[in-house]
Length: 363
Image (spheres, rainbow, N blue to C red):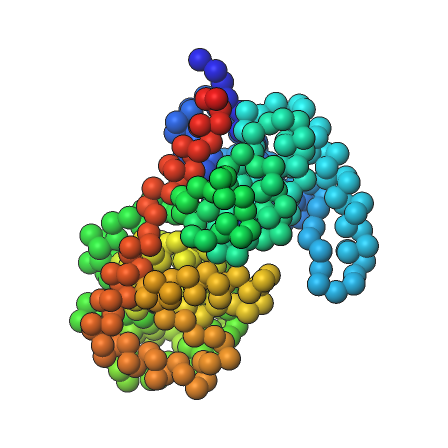
């Protein structure tokens, strides 16, 4: 039996790292004796997260271009040349069967080197608006696994496969965990629960909004699980009380989703994919501080399918309390949003991506 070898590269943010780890885990299930190597950027979070998941990782000296003229930008050509050279060495030494890129700067030189060496490559694009790295890599990639429709304007149509984004498998049947989740968080089963997700680091504007609206929520008999993020926990932990659970980080995402009735969230690709699976009414507040405003585009794709509500940060002061109160009172609207967002879920995304990888090694 052939012993397969896979290199995966993606990083800079959890949105690139966790899909890569999910793909590796699924490949490992199908090929228990396969060898795996991750390649990331030397000073980014993947250098910690990947070894924690049990995989070896090598770091490249690479970083993205800044939007203004900086010393880092002047160093970019040197870093790129160095990373291409190192990628060629890694490819030559490891001899992978397939190389998989999930976005982020390190995947650029690595997949470029793999393509030049004649090794099949797969690009996994999480967002509805692709990043520059994946757009460049798509020209030579053998397959491009996407999570959204209508990406033909960015990628060669014949290479696109609609798979969805890899998501946690423990989110597939959360309704059965609702009673356990309510006990776990010490919630009142007779009250509506609002879940606020600002990401693991936190979202300043969402935290400011929740602080301002907290009494309003409580007066409407709504209890709150508020993930404020580790950067803001010291500032907001004072609001902890029986009906308000302030947390910096959530270990049991399945429980918070199971306990919640309405969700406020950023619109990163992984979060959006999870929320489709979870199927609860969502108000998206996209971060405006991301490349190409891709969070707004991610959220808009769900709104266009009548599966969520979108509020821009600039609209929060004038619109939020009106929109939230109307949603809370309108059970028909809640059901419509819930039913429509569920239709967009891709629970078998990881298996479908791996099926595309397997096609390439079996050729």
